Each structure stands twice: as structure tokens, then as C-alpha cells.
Length: 231
Length: 287
Image (tube, rainbow over all chains, first blue to last red; front, side):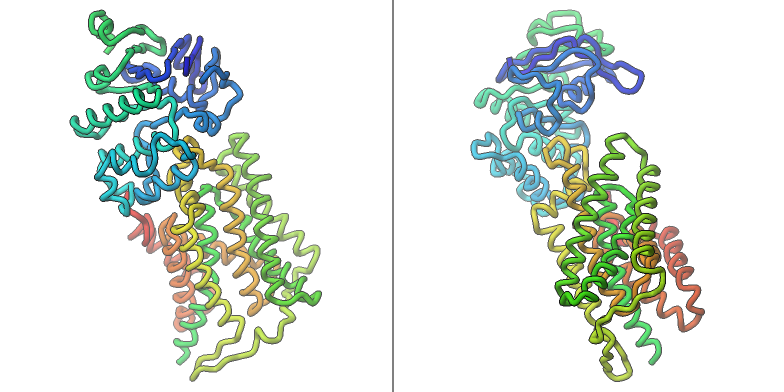
């Protein structure tokens, strides 16, 4: 098991947002984490990254308990987050964005290098000298995706990666994620509003409602079951 | 040709102020800390150099040692004061007050060790005057302009061409993303305050070569530098430098029409004009 959450609870201030979260992700697996706004999906991802202290439960990554592991060390272990809406350095050029993240995250056997970024998103290659914050939302999201993957990600946590992207680009980006998962045994937890696109690449579907997991099964089981009233 | 002399005087003062402004801007844009104690670091640099020169240390070596000490002091202030407060989730106001406290400590220690009177540098070459036509400049002033422009160019090169400079700008641009891409923002904060302190030590030594040392002499330059930073557009090194030069030139030229005691008033007048017509600053980037 690559990533395992048992009985996890977390929240902000006096409010506990998620509780009793149990989730297991195997290497190479893509888990679509779905649910309506405020269901606790982003909070779950933040808890996994160590950005939020846990109120109960435990998280293990690659068999190692994470309770005393800081954010930077979790990233070094291969846990990578694409944060919703703020995944780029807006005041730096595209090339500088890629360079600063690459400098700290690319080792000798990186699965995703600088050349891969420009191969996957040729438009970023054309925009190398452009200030990232001045690009369109879709281009910014492509850059954010690239920054999250630079190096050797072993478990990618994607928070709404399709926001601002054209449908054909979403397909291409998801296919790329799927390909890296298949070829390198990388896992992905995909939080998405675009349920249809997420279901197409997901190996498993987990549905959250009011801070709890209410469904965990295959995409086919999800389609057959009556969980859709949660949306 | 009084106006020409005033213009040149403004350029001299402005270039030194510009270096104070870029150092403060670098720190503020990255850490978001209103580092008032920077005025103390600026002042301390002059006194350290004065002590070293008085004990027979060569001038250049004294300058370099003063820069080195200020670098260490800056790192210490960030690491031992601001970072500790931040870990305890202190608000910006608390950090500002801590910074004011650090400034008071530095100033009082200087006043106790030296004196509150003006001290002149014991370097005769600095006050030797060069005359070009009707213009009169001393060597301290010429050196100030030359080294300040070099410091500006060096800072620009560092921020845009080196990987550390780019990492600092990345942390300034999006600290949250910096955290989850292992740029180690806390470490970058220590480095940026250290670098800013090294930069401010340069005018800290050069300006007193001409005007002498005073324990509380750092506050007005810092205030003007702050205004230059805001009017220039927070985050823009060029904006901070250009505005500092512009403010100093206008302050000097204003002497033609209004008395000298109004010069700080002139600074604030320029500031108000900017806030009314260009509130994000002259060199602010479009979001």
C-alpha cells in the first residue's frame, strides 16, 4: 500500500471538517475523490500533505507513519500537491517557474524532467519568457500541473486540475497522468468537478459527503449505485 | 547654476537612498515583514566601519567587514526574532513592534558605546573636492554614486540571473507553493534579510563618509526608502531605486522655492500624489 489513511479527522479552528476518513491507495492507482463543494475533499488533501494537523487517525506513506514528517519531507518522499487555483509563481517567467522547482526536486532518476514539461505542453515552450501570471487561466493550469509533476512524484494529489482548461486539453492532461501512473507506478488522488472526465481515467471512485466517505468502489460500481444524489 | 548643483546633490543622496530602498524592498516583498530595524542595521554599518578605520584598519577592509557583520546581524534578527514570532503565529503588528524594539535596542547601544553626538570619519580623502565647471563634489559623494549604481545593477543581476535570486522571487510570489515545492521559505527568509542587510551596509558606510554619523540617523532614510518602495510598486527593485532617486532630486530642487525644513513634507506630498493617481506604484506589474 502506497498511501493509507485510517480514521483521519481534521479541521479549521473550532470546526472539524472531515472525520473517520479511511482511504488506501495502491501504487499505479488513480483514485477519483468526488463530492459536492464543502464535502471535505481539499481538507483531506491538505491533511495528507501535512498542511493541516490531524485531530485523530494516522496517515502512512510507503509504510512509514507521517505523523512526525514535515511538509518538505513529505514532498521529498514523493507526495506532490497541485493546489487549487494557486499552483504557479505568477511574478516569474514560465522558464523561471520550471527552473526553481526543478532545481529543488529533480534528482538523477527523475521521472518527469524539464524537457518533458515542454513536450507535454508545447504552448509553455513558446511562452518560456512570458510572465506566468499574465498567461490565460488554461496556460497557468498547464504550468501548475507541470510544477506538481517535476521530479519523481510517487503520489500526485490533484485539486481541481481541469479548472480553466478546454475539454480536449483536460483529456490530454488526464491521459498523460494515466500514462505516468501506468509506466512508473505513480498513484494519483484526483479531486474533480468534471466527474465524467475523472471517471474515465479512475481505477477507483471515492465519494465524500459532509466530511465523511460515503462510497468507495470501482467506477462501474459507482455508475450502478445510487450515490449520485450526493451531487 | 544653483539648480545644477542641487540636481547633482539630489542624485548623490538619491542613489544612496535607492540602495536603502532596494534592500528594504527585497526584504519586504519576500517576508512581508515591515523590517523597521533595517534602519538600525544601516546605522550600525557606519559605526562599525568608523571603529575599524579609527583602529587603523584599511578603508576597503573596514567596509567589507562592516558588510559582513551586518549580514550576520540581519540573519540573526530574522532567525532569532521574526521566525520565532511567526512560529507562535504572531500578527504583522506584533512583528512590527518587535522590529521597532530591535531598532531601539540597536540605536541605544550605539548611543551608549559611542555618543549621541555627530562623529566624523577620520578619512581625509573623502572630503577632498573635485570641481567640474561650477559643480563641486567630494570623493565620498562620487564614490557613493558609483557604488550605489553598481549595487543596484548587482541586485538586479542577482534577483533575475541566479538560481537563489529566482528562488527568493518565487517565495515572494507564492509562499504557499514554495512550501510544497521544497523551496524552504523559512530558510529563504533568513537569506533574504541577510542579503538585504549586506546591501544596506554599503550606503550605511558611504553616506556618513560625507555627512558624519548619528545614532538615530537611519530613520529618515528608511522612511524615504519605504515611500520610494511603495510609490515604485512593491516587488519592483527598479521602481524602488528610481523613485528614491526621483524623490531625493525633487527634495533638493524644492530648496529653490521652499525652505529646507519642508523637505520631508515634499516627500510625503509626492507620496500622496502617487497614492491618488497610481496607488499600486509606478512599476507595479499587472496581475
